[in-house]
Image (cartoon, rainbow, N blue to C red; front, side, top):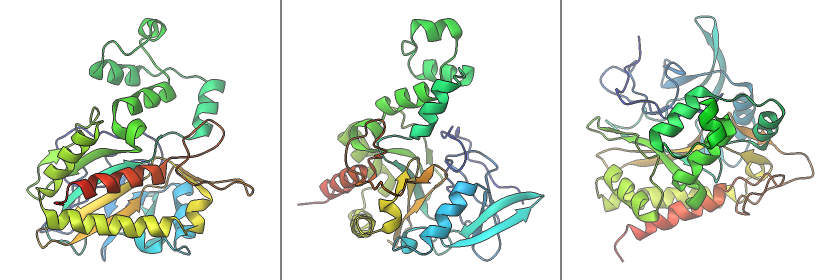
Length: 304
């Protein structure tokens, strides 16, 4: 059956594997809602499974993750299936055991583009009219004189500019969108930048529930502990990945790493600490720096 669509605009414009599912589990299990990401990238499968449009890079990540300490923090992977002559990666639907859940997609890291994308953009620059229009819709003064004359911007220029607007550059993560249990969708976080703004958005998402904040904080600290010992994490550049936050009225919470279409394995001699500031060539992604800030913000939402 066709998936239901949230009537708010999708906010992800990145490529393979970068869109994020926010599937729902209402009365009919075949139906779900996507708050952010490319429409049509996901289908609900049988037996609590989710089908995501096939991406080779993401498949390779899941195969490695199934053998890593991070396995409990990612969807269980079940291989490749074909639907209507298209290939899909099949994984667990993380919402199966929640009752009318609220869901948030939070993109982690200090950048959302790979270093290889910068190299390609320099070698084969392709100004994009659609990204120019997105830029001027947010800030008419943002384009340069040359970009204004071309009525187009490079994808990497757009992404770098986009990250200075949000908390990606300042905190190492950003809220992409969330949907409350009452079906209220929120995706307008392009200018959510300060700690105070992020805290206000999280408070709205959890509806001021201290119990839910405690649940998320506990799980994020567990995730951080495992990340710091994970072989997979130490040897991969994790870019454009998200944390999926899920809770319901029973007080149950869950946090999972999702979206590995831009996660690449490093050369054998290189490892990352994921906290060192990025400088082109060092491959650092700021993932743990962002997670540290996220944990600190949630901790500050709790009563002292």
